[in-house]
Length: 384
Image 1: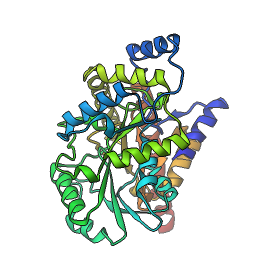
Image 2: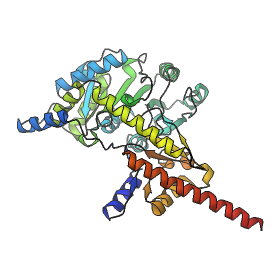
Image 3: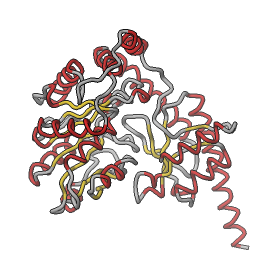
């Protein structure tokens, strides 16, 4: 995934005009009030060491908001703040996994999960998310995937790359399965504020001593470059993660944590604004792609991404992405970055403006039509 995005950036830097539909980094700037807080904190000298795992005011507001969201009695001692949800996931896995353990995730899987799980000495297994409307998980498939080595259910809902959300029945199934097999649940919820219709379903009935919630401000508040995120977890695990942070991070910058407090204090207004923008851009892209032959966009229900089924074009996802970039200057991510079964789809981001989305859809349409015409010409030639 990163290689595709980096190649697009490299070409842009060399002067090529690239329609970049790779990363989920919205073109929206961080709210001015958040920026002003960071600037004021810098001028006030808040540039020194901070408590490992987060300053108390930030941990307290995270605990209050998470408790309100899922009904658990979280406190500041349950919170570990660090440079993004990715770091929080890495730290949690390093503290929970032993060599030979197995982490069971939902396929398609966010691209960095494999490396984080392997770094902890564990192996990654998957069960499929079903793209059709309704429940995303199958109870029989989940049951069959559990082994004596399974230690963690790694959940990402809303899902990256597919933009799919779990139903209440899915969450109940995962909760019951975790309790029955004494498994941890790690729930990556960085897109939970960007659900288009309805609301994110929390793990309200999960065992508090076997639950880890990951979140950040990157997606919800257009703060990808700030690198601020957290884990909400049992106190014993939180203590272990703080010990790990002492050896690796030694605390997050004070001025960024101050800005995070302002961001969370703004309420729902900034997240609602971004959610509506992403929903509108998603609909724009879906409309533009509707008449394109040979491809089918799997409609997302949240987030900043969509998958495009390209199986009718007779190309694997890596070849499709390479030829689309070389021939039409459009960068997308091959599905194989997210799944061993990802040869039939690519991921696009609709975090960019409408002009970029329209240009991307137009180029994909031109490529698909040319590919289909080429296939027809080849079949006619063979018939001769």
